[in-house]
Amino acid sequence: MKKISSAVVKRLPRYYRYLDELMENNVERISSGELSRMMNVTASQIRQDLNNFGGFGQQGYGYNVKHLHDEIGKILGLESEYRIVVVGAGNLGQALANYPNFVRRGYHIIALFDKNPEIIGKKINECEVLDVVHLVDYIESKKVDIVALTLPKEQATLVAKDLAKSSVRAIWNFAHTDLDLPDNIIVENVHLSESLMRITYKLSELED
Amino acid sequence: MKKISSAVVKRLPRYYRYLDELMENNVERISSGELSRMMNVTASQIRQDLNNFGGFGQQGYGYNVKHLHDEIGKILGLESEYRIVVVGAGNLGQALANYPNFVRRGYHIIALFDKNPEIIGKKINECEVLDVVHLVDYIESKKVDIVALTLPKEQATLVAKDLAKSSVRAIWNFAHTDLDLPDNIIVENVHLSESLMRITYKLSELED
DNA sequence: TAGATTGTTAATCGATTAACAATC
DNA sequence: TAGATTGTTAATCGATTAACAATC
Image 1 (tube, chains in turn blue, brown, purple, cyan):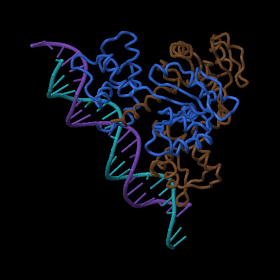
Image 2: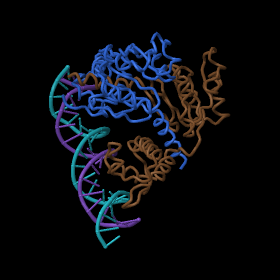
Image 3: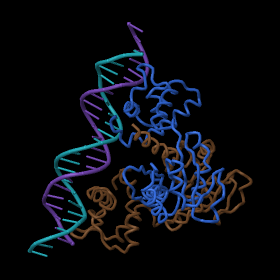
Image 4: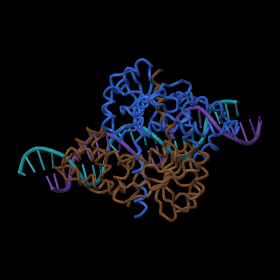
């Protein structure tokens, strides 16, 4: 299969969200034109994006909402179940563990890890907080798919060193640093402070 | 001033982060070539990006780290102070309010808002939780710059309606929906579930 | 069948990379 | 001055949009 550009991959979850809403509203079919108006993109882009994965539509009709929704879901890997652990049981880590919609999509947060003895042993949303020294063993025995890193950058860098040698397949990085990991490990960064800086860039731009 | 492409704006905070680290390590000067190797981008891109804002370097020498750091900081609006309120005092909202590095950059979270009477009146990191019915009044009287929305999508949509008529200048949206707001309000979306879907897209891609 | 809308090719636009003259 | 490295123009690459034949 040909390589899909990251621009397309970034847009897929948004299509999925809109299709989800259309389903909730019992809409059966939609054309690229209607969808383009809802989403504020061009109809051309929608058709191009979808045709990277095959022809989901029908000439003269458009797209069947449920079918397209399910197909994009499959592409996004939502038919599988994923085991996730969160390293760093601070506010952000707890927020992830408590997030109710993740389970619905097959994202199971099965444990949290921390180094603080005061938190170790507690339960967050039926999820135990374990000592971070047992992280790698846990990953191997429970076949963890994704590790979320919600801790300060220095500690994230240290944990990443261990993860590099483990069987984990993907890292969801909230620490404010780039992690040095082998190519076979997928890294998705969420840098909140960078997001905030993009806001203040635009705010100060407006003042000129 | 000519319009800067969003691709460039997205990269600026990362430059800033690397320059921050170089300063911490007492590095005085750096060439685009060295920086490109550190950051895994082309030297050409670095020079192109920076030259959108003016010539910060010197032929034969490179860039003075402190000077470049400060200039990018100015571009990102970090010389100003910002008043931020968080609407939705759940785990994620509390995580933002507790985040220690924001203040250092001039980001001041001055209040949280919620509709839950059990939380209203509590203090999170010296920051009071107020009743969301007073949100708009508060924004006007305290001249709030940025509102972070950390609540379920239905409620976020409702709050956005009020914000559209307020004097707030930017919204940091963590709700899983696109907000319908006038063009003069800046919106920065952080869709965590979409970020997670990009991971599982890549995971399931690997399996083929 | 006629109308609508896709799938897909071709044209355009913009972003990235390469190259090199300017200059510290 | 010679060497290094920027600032900037030109070339390339990729992504988006437009157009339209295919077809339901």
